[in-house]
Amino acid sequence: MLERLKSAALLRADSQTIETISILGLGYVGLPAAALFALSGKRVLGVDTNPLTVEKISAGDCLIVEPHLPERVAAAVDSGRLTASGKPCPADAYIIAVPTPFHPGSHAPDISYVEAALRSIAPHIQPGGLIVLESTSPVGTTRHLVEMLRDLRPDLAMPEAGDDGDIDIAYSPERVIPGRTLIELVDNDRVIGGVTPRAAQRTADLYASFVKGELHLTDDRTAEMVKLSENTFRDVNIALANEMSLICKAQGVDVWEMIALANRHPRVKILEPGPGVGGHCISVDPWFLVAGNPDLANLIRTAREVNDGKMHRTLDWVRETIEATGAEKIACFGLTYKADIDDFRESPALDIVLELNRLYPGRVIVADPFADLFRMRDPRAEELTFAKADHALDACDLAVMLVGHTAFRGLPQPHVPTVDVIGFWR
Image: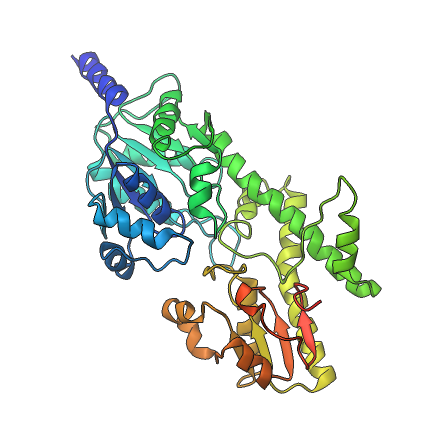
C-alpha cells in the first residue's frame, strides 16, 4: 500500500503543470522575476515582509529604479496575474529570492532569511511541489533546505540520491547586472542545479517560460559554486585594479593613463579602480568561499581585503587633502555602490560619506540623484546634509568624487581641490 501511495506521489510530481508560483522576496531580483513570470502567463503571488513593498506592488507600483520595471510590474498587476502579500499561500512552485548577507562583525554567511522563507512555505507544500532557491548561497545550502524540510514535513518523502521523492528542490541563481536586469533575466544563459535530475529538468521547464538564453542543467552544489565563482572572478580582477591604483599613486603615475595603455595589449584587460567594491553580490559572495574553505581561499581572501581596504585608503586621501588645503566644506558626489542605480547596499561610497560626516560634523555636503530614495529607506539619511550637485560644487572647498552618475556629467571642472578615485574629472 505504501509503495502504491509513493508511486502515485511520484506520478503527480512528474506530471504536475506549474501554473501558480509564490516568489519570496520582492527585491532587485525577485520583483523583476515575478513580473516576467506573470507576463508569461503564470499566476504569481509575490511575498515580502516589508508592508510598504506589498502596498506599492499591490497598487501596480514599485520602489526599485530599474529600466522598464515599473511598466512591467504595472502590466502584470493590471492583468491580475501578479499579486503581493506579506504571507505565502499554496502554490505549485516556490522561488526563494531573499537576502543572504554575512553576520555582523564577521564574514560568516547568514542564511537565516532563506531558512525563514522555507519555514514560512513548509505548511503549504504539497506532493508534486517545486522549490527553487535563487539567493546566492554557500555551497551546501540547497541540501540544507532538504534536511530542514525533512524535519518540518516528515509526511513528505524528500529527494535522495537515486530517488526523486514527493517534491523537487533546485538551485538557480540570477546572473544579472542592475540597469539591465530585465534584459539579462531573459537573454542570459542560466545555470540550474537540481538535487535530482528531475528537479533540474522541472526547474528548467519553469524558467523556459520567459528565458531565451540557454539553460544549463547540473547538480545543486555545482550550481552554487558556479555562482560564487562568477562573483569572485570579478572581485579578484577589481582588486588588481584597486591595488594598481595604490601603487601608481605611490609611484607618481597616472593610473588611468597606465590602464588605458596596458589594455592596448591584446590579452590584457585591467578593470577600473574605485573606492572599493559594493553591492550585495561581489562584496559578499567571495567571503562565502573563504568561510567554507579558510585554508584554501588565500587569493580570494586577499582580494576581499584589498577591495575593503580601498575604502580606508580613500578616507586617508580625503583627510590628507583637508589637512593640506584647510578645506572647510567637503562635497561628496555619490552614495550608491554603482553609477546610475538606486542600490546602497554594501556601498563603499556611503561608508566613506558617513565616516567623513562623523569626522567633520557640519562640514560635509552630499549629492546623489537617488537621495530621495535613500531618505526613504535609511534612517542614517537624517545625519547628512544633501544638496543638488551643482550647488554642492559651488559651496565646497574640496570635491570628492565617489560614484560617476550620469547626472553628474554636466558638472564643470572643479575650481577647488579634488579627490577623484574614479577618474571622473580627468
